[in-house]
Image (tube, rainbow, N blue to C red):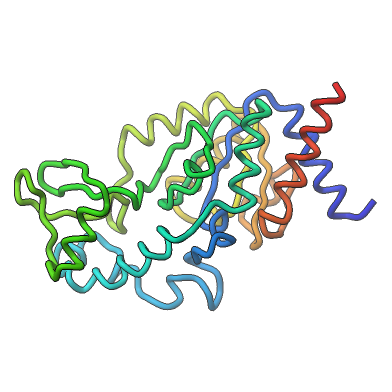
Amino acid sequence: MSARKEQIERLAEVIVNSETVVALTGAGMSTESGIPDFRSPNTGIWTKVDPGEVASIQSFIANPEKNMNFLLELGMTIFKAKPNKGHKALTKLQKLGKLEGVLTQNIDGLHQRARTDNVLELHGTANEAKCMRCHEIYPITTFVNQVLKGDSQPSCSKCGGLLKPNTIFYGEALESEVLRKADEMIGICDLVLVLGSSLLVYPVAFYPQKVVATGAKLAIINIQPTNMDSHAEVVIHEKIGRILPAVVETVAERLESR
């Protein structure tokens, strides 16, 4: 048996033997859908643009027009993307009864489009816009249509406040209710499966640390090493779409043979 096959078998075993599995997904989950991640050398978005200039709440408020080209370009990439083999494998894992839910750092909505249930979007969603004054929620098309018509400061139809994508910009805190629900999900799990996250962004990076500290298990599939690799039961440095479908298929076979 090859070393990679052994890793797949071992991860499947860990999942089968766990009662409550939660997936924690990052940008690497969606790179195979054509959405670039943020920190990979040479290809990551933040290697090409300064997030402080195009993705911070301060820059957006001070000069919305400067941010629009970046937001529209990223938005078009997201809206054209489709769920990949990794997303679909997670949905299958859930249908097998071995996935409680997903905590995702991604804003692309691809988990939901793959029909995975109980998805908590920690950093918001690119599919909505939000008024910064009255907090009214709109479909993102409301924001995009105003921008495409030449309005560099898209506004709320109810109060006239500035609209922004309903995502967490640099300098913004995560929603307290989202954090509460994430803490609940982490608190009941006995395995966190990290998929495509560098585990460098806080407070999300605290979750694997909390899991290990409470005696639950950790498994990681990520191309680059993370600072939690040494604490994980299984670590596989590979693209998710090349590994997770085989893991889920092995889980299905083991469950069927029980």
